[in-house]
Image (cartoon, rainbow, N blue to C red; front, side):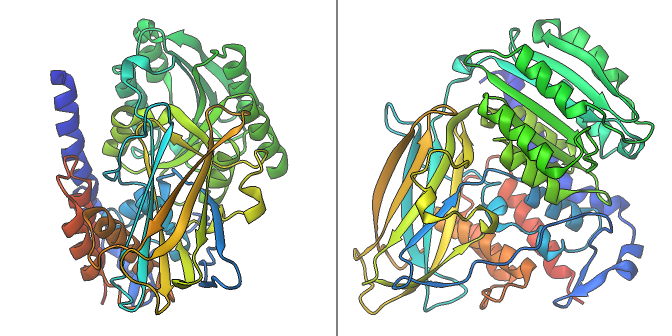
Length: 494
């Protein structure tokens, strides 16, 4: 490993903890007086932040519907938003900001690499449910093929950056500028960067420029300044037009949007915006949206648009998160599995009922599983995806008894024909493996934050203990950071 890489990993570990700790120094105590009370906890919903209402998945009788189908979700925004609320504002996030699937997929699990010639691997296990002793947990895992960096496709990144006055604060535009500069040091000479800005008007600040001319790119980044009103004009269209004009066949063509939430980007309606991003997604241009700050965060729109644009939605709360997304885990920008869907078929002899934890806005009709025209999520190089089901077993449930089949479909390339993968799942030991313990800990904390009707005996202490048991080596310090956040949440109860 290069010395620079060793330093970067160490820095990322330190900064990951600092995301949590720094907020303790400058968060004002007056937030307590402004906070609402939710389930006995103070909650500051940050007026202006917008989230879609989440209706949790209910238990479903296997005798009525034995199949469950959903699109995978690789976003991480919900977790980072929770961290900002706890560390900076010392308050719990609002319930509708808590998407448990994004908490799960913030973490990289210890899953096996795909077999030779495959783009994804599947693995699964069952175990006891910590918050409902009479129930069981089913963990599903997918992992994208790890591509060596030297084999990554050439990048064609067009940054679409909101430079309106509201992006002025240190946790917005200045943070985004640092991330772009950091990423440049790890891209290759033939990768290219373009920058389109919008505020009172739209400007192509930098035409696609090779990274070998990094000095020119950094000079353009230094010019970025937040001022004026937000009127995007042709902003989104201009960004996609650049990406298409300089499209790299077989490359990683992607628009990366940075904003604090204003989607006044020159498209007059939500339907027209979604139609546009879908159109360019079908041409092989991906979309990643990065949200910044609070008080104006249009989380609902960001997630919806990124989903339709074959991309991801991230929330940037600190410098460590910039390093994680744009440098340390930038391999996730290299999609190895497109339109990835999951279908689980339960055995009615061993499973009475099931409930998918999270993924509420990713649930699909069972008939859509084999329909290649239906859009679904992408998996990046080396990325792991995790899903949990809570099961109510029958009396026939026991070790090695058949529980379900776990099927997945994905496309090697956008617009191609999907490839099926399948494994059978049997009931396992009545213990929690490290992977299942970590997943259960993450999910139980989400259930507590949501004050879920399905939380049973879940508590912050339970979540912390489960994460501690499943954290393993934790070389990046993410689990340590998470346990600190859980402790902070538990301290907020009056």
